[in-house]
Image 1 (cartoon, one colour):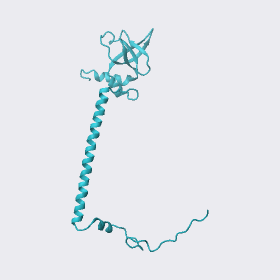
Image 2 (cartoon, one colour):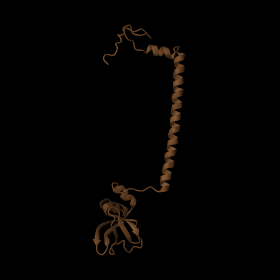
Image 3 (cartoon, helix red, strand yellow):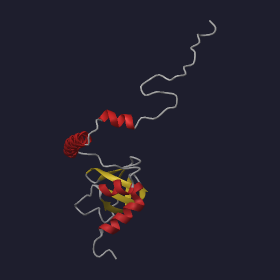
Image 4 (spheres, one colour):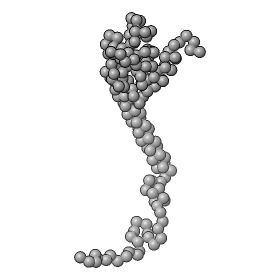
Length: 173
C-alpha cells in the first residue's frame, strides 16, 4: 500500500513513537530528546552496521545492560517530530531563515504602508469630488448641515432655549 515509498511507513511509526525519539550526540551515541537518557543502537538493529547513522531515530524499547540500547529502531526526520508532536518538539530557526523571514516581514510592511497611502490619497480625491459636486449643485456645506440639524421644540436655531432652569448654589459645607 505504500507503493515502494517507505517514508509513509516511517512517518506512521514516528507518529506512534515520537515520545521514544532520540537525537544523535556522537559517533553511534544517541540521547533521548524528552528524558535525556543516553543510549546506543543495539547491535542486532538493522541500523547498527549501516555505516550511516541517522540524525533522528524512534525506537520501540530500551534494553538496559551495562549501557542503554535501543531496539526496533526506525530512522525519522526531525521535521516529522515537530509536525507530529508539536507539544514536545519545535524546529529552531537558523540565522539565515530568521534573516529571510525578517526581510520578508519588512517588505510586507513597506508594501502595506504604500497601499495605505494610496488608499488615503484615493479617499481624499473622493472627498474633493463630493465637495465640488455639492458646491456645483448650488449649496454649501453649511446649508447641508442646517438641513440635517435636529429640530428641538422651544429652541430657535442657534439660540439658547426659552426655558432655563434656575441655577442653585451648593447646599451644605
